[in-house]
Length: 434
Ligand SMILES: Nc1ncnc2c1ncn2[C@@H]1O[C@H](COP(=O)(O)OP(=O)(O)OP(=O)(O)O)[C@@H](O)[C@H]1O
Ligand SMILES: [Mg+2]
Image (cartoon, rainbow, N blue to C red; front, top):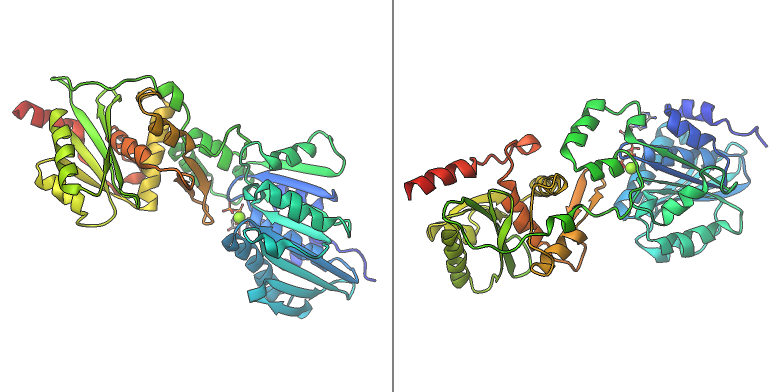
């Protein structure tokens, strides 16, 4: 058999220079390794390189899996394995079945080593063989049952090792594993915690830009790699903000309103807000009977001293927007894309965090409070932060409130693509012309 594999030498051959954090992970011999690091830290690259190094260890035969929570993510890790092998280890490739996510390499001892890429969203595919190693990318997004019942079981027969890499996501099952690796609680475990900025190749300016743009909690979890209690939820201080009541229009006040339409469900929600940031009126409509609803909305706006309404539109010529306009409403469109939606949600989140808004008390607006508390964020495969209601829960109240609150935004910031005239100024003009 050949000498033991030197990972440093191998990585050099592969053109991979691990940064200090990555190196610590590669040097670990613990049977269970847990790395909690921020986005863009180099998790996927680290996972792919560790898989290749493991496969090249001199063994008669070995098999390891590289697992990710979704098909897209698993493809990402596996293709990193394949690209690196194809460009630097071509002479070692015995077989490569890309569509099966399966590559077999001749290892340094002349034996055969197999790496398989797996997606955890198909648990049936996780049944079966005993493994020598298991590497999981974005592990915190796996359901705990997948680790417990499917994956950790695969390691028993061959006394295999596991490396779990992830951005933190609350204090769930991965946090518990991570904790075992801290302060020598369990000798089988080794764990690390590394914010994104410990990747020296990551642009510091980009990180600071994100810090300014994102709600504090999102940033602390996604970039700071902190395990935060109750995380996943986008809006904090919802209950603290829910101290208000519905109010009648006051003659000398200006109002703005948000109307949420972009939804498969036949429901729309409008939220009227005064200049103090108090949501003073909320209404829920069925989109079915539009003629009637347009009248109702325009009447409400008129009642609130001709409030300016911001409506989400999914495309040009949204009929409801046009109808409201024709009915004499002061209405502006907010074109909805994933990006513009993120800005809208971030703004609402920031205003809540800074205690700038008051919303009706939970007994007055139960569905609004429920939707706000359930709203969660996740980081997409491309690394951007996405926010949405969990499946089965509406988001119309959230969007309606966010559209009203958007009109408090003086600084267009990263959302320069939507430039609205300041509604308060316009409102004032209109008000004075009355
Ligand atoms: N040691 C390294 N040498 C060179 N480039 C690196 C290194 N580590 C990471 N990178 C680069 O940094 C970027 C982020 O790496 P990678 O995709 O592995 O990070 P990630 O933590 O998985 O990110 P995400 O949170 O988006 O999934 C990639 O362009 C990658 O090539
Ligand atoms: Mg990744």
